[in-house]
Each structure stands twice: as structure tokens, then as C-alpha cells.
Amino acid sequence: MIELILALCLNVQEPPIISPPKVQLQFSVTHDGTSGESIDGRLYVMLTKGKLPLIGGPNWFKAEPFFALDVKDWKANAPLVLDKTADAMVPMLEVEDATWKAVAVFRRENDQSRLAVPGGLYGEPISFDGSGKDSGNIPLTVNTPVPEREWKPHKNLRLDETPSKLLSDFYGREILHGSCVIVPDNYDPNREEPYPVMYWIGGFGSDHYGGRYMKMLFTGSDYDDQICRVVLNAQAHTGHHTFTDSANNGPRMTALMSEYIPYLEEKYNLGGINKKRFLAGHSSGGWTAMWLLINYPDFFAGAWPLAPDPLDFHYFQTLDLYEEDANMYIDSEGSERPIARMGARPVLFAKKFVAMDDVIKDGGQIGSFEAVFSPKGEDGRPVKMFNRETGAVIPEVVEHWKQYDIRKFLEENWNTLAPKLSGKINIIAGGLDTFYLEDAVIALQEFFEEKDFNAMIRIVENGDHGSVFRGTVIREMDESIAKKLDLPNIQDKASKPKDD
Image 1: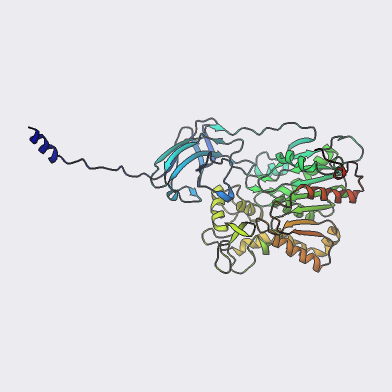
Image 2 (image 1 turned 180 degrees about the vertical axis):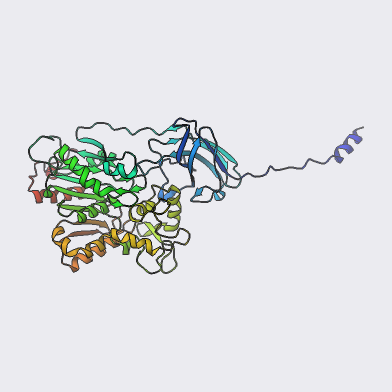
């Protein structure tokens, strides 16, 4: 009997091991109607191998996979699938095998460039193991409203937001001017003489809520008891609008100059006359300060652009926009074009950066430039300055950009502008700017020297993008203003001993 049983066992074959078919990665996202039974906007899925995905947007220097698509009339509880056809920096099928965390973010049209902003939604993060080829369907939700930003009152800070008629008419919805007004301890809005004022414009991604941080920087000045600051909001849905009148962002400069500055100066007792108005800014804000000064040279007494975005489009970072057969992705030797570096070492290249930027769509850096400088296309969106597949620059679009080339603007209007701008321009840039912005500044410096023009331009040896944005420069700016206005140095903080 035992032999029979053994024989029977030997004759029974092991069942074949059947592996279930591998299912490609996709994300199925729902919302519960918290923000409406039907919603329109753009949906993002952010991935990370770290602790939590970044819901505000990707890290430029360490971008991880993320995906997006535009949504229209998205009904509550109706699954929306993001698969290999979704907009992607890295194709979904190429997501590497790892333990991932995913979170979904929904963004409506708004006036901020970040992804997760009030009016939008986000969900709980979900962990999964696998790759783009075999992770299957990952269910996600966007049921949590992004909270409104909080503003804590401060004796020296005034958060100001007021409707703009010009911009609201352009967009067909209410658009607000925004700023943080920084006032001295002994501020008196009713004193007879208006306060000197510096209008500050921050860089890409910053806004007027940064006034609290700027207040700390300005406190290092001996003249924070006499000079008021206005930290202006230059954010838009498309990115940094640079207070430029443009086809896509509307009459931003006109609205600032004809609506908002007159309102601010009357309400807070600021400026009032040319010699008491100054401009300053960093990065995109530095470019903005220069743009406003050359367009309104009789209105402002001076500007301090720090590490400004390209002032000369012959030096648009590492690209000459006017060069024949110019290409965003590769240089004249066929090498990948870098757009960011750490020290002298390139760390970010144009093609990969553009791929990331295009997934963001509205609010990315390259898209921000195109929203400011490009015409509006037939589809209602900014016309792309270069072919996204090949990188080839499109000369017809660059022709439209020329009107915003500050060096060219100065050259074409030199006889009129030179006497009005003499002694008013103060530009500081790092000699190893992180985003290769110093070459345009150096070229402008050479132009001024050829013209024997009175301007201060300084290149900080080995300085990077942030090295020019520091307390010592704030002190230098204020000392220059104080000298022009003959302000007494009452505080003299530098000579006072510091507490141990």
C-alpha cells in the first residue's frame, strides 16, 4: 500500500507556477465634492522616496518623478486616471523599482505660482513598492482643502491687499494688488513729511508674505528708523510677472504705477516726490527693479538690482537668443547646455529642467519667462520661445522678446535715458552666479564704461546667486539713500558693542 501511495505521488506533477500579469503603474484619483461637485484645474501626482512628497512643487535640484493633467468638469467621486499618457518629467513606465510615497494635489487657477495654494486640494500620501512597469493601480484622493495662509500682526508690518481695476478687467475676475509695508517703531502716518520708501521685489517664488523675513534683514540697517519699505507681490498663476505689461499677464506695470503706488503713498504717507522713492530686488525682482527704473526714470531716485535675471538677451543664462541656430538644449559644440551650477560645477541642464517645468505648466520658471516676454498664442497661452522637442530657438518669438531686453532698451533710448539715470543704477552680482547671470551684468558694465556713464556695478568674486542678498548689502543700500537725503545716523548700530 505504501508503495502504491508513493507511486501515485510520484506520478502527480507539481502545478505550474502562474505569475499574474504585471500591471503598469497608474494612479486613480477621486475628490469627494468638498470644493464643488464639479471642478476645473490641473491635477498633479507627486512621488518621493523620502519622507513626504513636496506638494508645493518639485525641488529644482533634486526633482523626483511627478505627473499631471488638466481636468475639466471633474465630478465628485468619479475616478480620474493618470497613466503613461499623463504629462511627465520622466515617463511613468521608467519610474525605477523602489518604495515610493505618492500624494495628489489639485490646483485651480489662482494668483500664486505654487502648486498647493488656497482654493486647491490635496490628499493623504500613499506608499507603494514597485516600478513604473509593475506597480499597478494606486488609489489616491484630494479631499483636503489647502488652508488659507495665516498672517500674524506685528507692530512694524502692515499687510495690504486691495483690488486692481485694471487687472480685474483684464482677467475677468478680481485680482488683488499685494504688499507688506514695513514701518519704523515710531511710525506716524500723519506726520507732515512723507517717509522715504524703498519698493522691494523678491525673486521667483517669493511674495509679500516674505515681508516678515525682510523686516529682519532691514533691522540691521542704521536707517530702519527713518526709511519705510514696501515688499511688493510679484506672483501670478504663471510665475513671476515682473511688473511688466505683457500680453499674457496683463498691464502689471501700468496697474502698479497708476493704481497701487499712488494708493500706498497716500495711505501710508510714503514717498511723495522723486528723490524719496527707491527700488531694489533680488533675482527676478532685481530684473524688475531695473525695468521699472528705466521705464520711469523721473519717478524713482535709484535702484539696486541684486543678481538680476538676464539684463541682456545675448546672455540669457548660457544662451545667446540672437545667435543663428540658437538652441536651448545644446551649445555650439554639441554639449548639453547647463543652466545652474554649484561653484564652477554644472549641476542642472536645460533639457531636463524644461521637462520638469513643462509638467508644472503654469508657474514654472521657463513658463514664467514665456508668460512675460512672449505673445499670446491662438490657444490663449504664451507662445513657446523654443521647440520643446529639439530645443531650437524660434526667431519670430525672440523678435517679440526684444522689447524686454534691458540692454537693447537702454541702447535705443540712450540719449534720453542717460542723463535721467546717471548715478541711479547700482547692480551687484556674484562672479559664479548659480544661474549664470553674471555675464549679462558684466556686458552691461562694459557698455556703461564705454559711455563713461555714472553707475555702480560690482561683481563679487566667486559669489553665487544668494551671496549678494545679505545684511551688509542692505546697510550699503540704506547708507546710499541716507547720503542722498542727508538723513542723520541716529542709531549707529555698527559702533555699538554687541551683547555677549
